[in-house]
Length: 69
Image 1: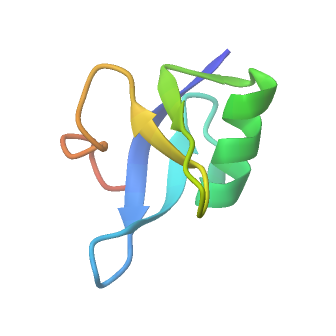
Image 2: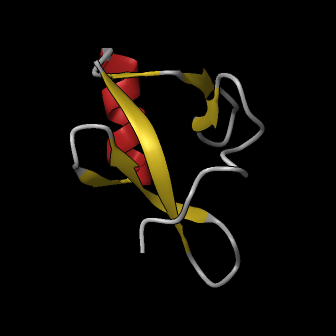
Image 3: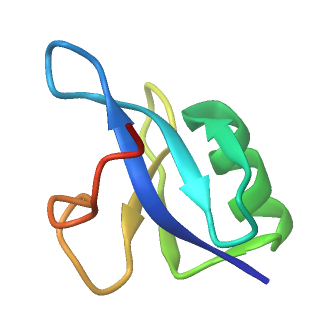
């Protein structure tokens, strides 16, 4: 299984994409789909009435993850 190792943020500080341990750079939506499918490990899927989201299992909102670029 892949792990998320880095993030890319937009100018508002919101995560827009992730880099995985296999070297893939994927959108937030693709990461969510891969996590739901069991391809990506080490994340929690948060469900809400508006939309689902991702959070790191052992850290808060990927705050300490390095930037992709």
